[in-house]
Image (tube, rainbow, N blue to C red; front, side, top):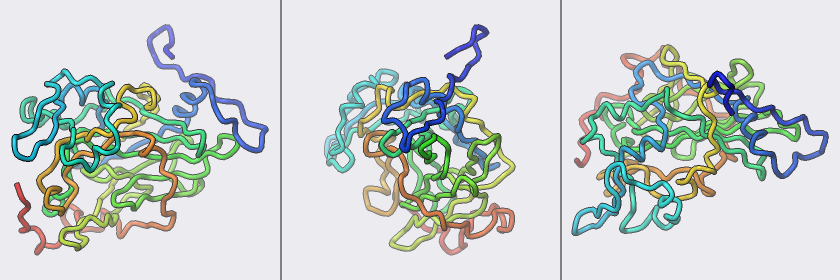
Length: 324
């Protein structure tokens, strides 16, 4: 809701429950209040170049296309003409279809700077899930830019990440789960998770936007030819971004929610199976809360202790040439 002066005013949080388990539903205002109360604070790497973006802005900057192997991609909707409600009807089969439907971000036409995102106009996309009693924050970026060198096997348009806060039966946080790549999500108990103003803090991996509870170098299991070569680096000293200051939006009410369109064009490296260069699908019943994560995971080392730019790359792997 908005105050008379135009500023955002959070609704009243839900009362503390006296029941053994939380009620099956909260009012939308109560969900929104919880989402604001525990909205994460993000610390970006000093060299980060691709920041959060409102997904609706990304839609306006994209065309909707369907891959066709022999006749070239078919354009379904042109630039600025992609109806969000059409995306919700694209079913899960699209993820592995021969003729995938995808959003093609028109950075070539609009300029590479369009990939920088727009923190000021991003939104707090949240999801309260009654079944797991969790709050999940969905974080969208226009572009995923892996570390230089073999990290290019991670490059793709569109990037969905998330942070899940597990609540107890009185709506108090007990654990934070951070999205990372290749099934290597990280967890910390609420007591051990970094916090500011009673809200969780995440250190965002440079370019990849994976979320971590501590700065440092983190293994990703990203592979080339079956060999793990790429690590994430999260660091202090960059932009601090408070998600609680952005307009809260229940992602399940967004017109595109539930669809399995690819948020980004299909990448050539994905075609030959050596990386993840295709845009991901967005929030849906299949991509909701993080329910399992590893509380024992620790960084390989601190970014400040690494040589050079801290990318933890070996010189001999840099000359690898990927398909165009």
